[in-house]
Image (cartoon, rainbow, N blue to C red; front, side, top):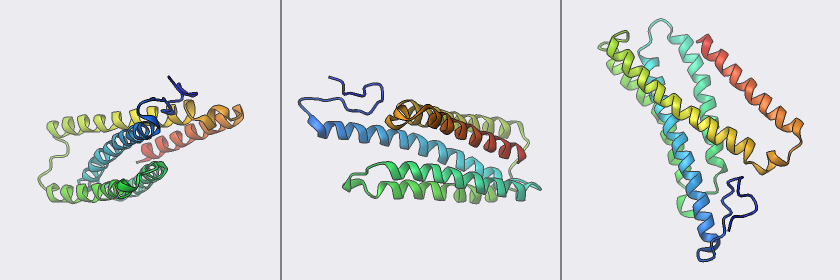
Length: 190
């Protein structure tokens, strides 16, 4: 029998046999799955950012400044998502490991890029195809995460947003759009 907020995906389905423990486990697993998708997309993206930075020529300083800001905001987004999960006592180390994975992925990719910098043909056809395919995979994962996790769960399925006055919802959506515009302009500047 569904709970009060079936469309809100609050995972409050009541199972007579399993009780609350099953519901908590189901909610935890759903959150863990979404975090792993986000983490994989960001780390995959960070690896290619690191490789690109290490193999860049004269635009290194500009790209470096842009990527520092880019990675900072990605890290803040991932960190805030990790901080909101009620981790069970036996899994308290999980957010630290996921944060560490994010923190070391770009430096390791930069080290790999510096190692292959002299033998790397940045404008070769194979290099451009491989880079395009991997960039599109990471972009697809990040777009999926943004649309499903951010927009759907924070705007459509969030109890606080559904109960908020329309001007609050519109202000939040406007700020989201403003942030997207600023990131697009920042990306264009690079």
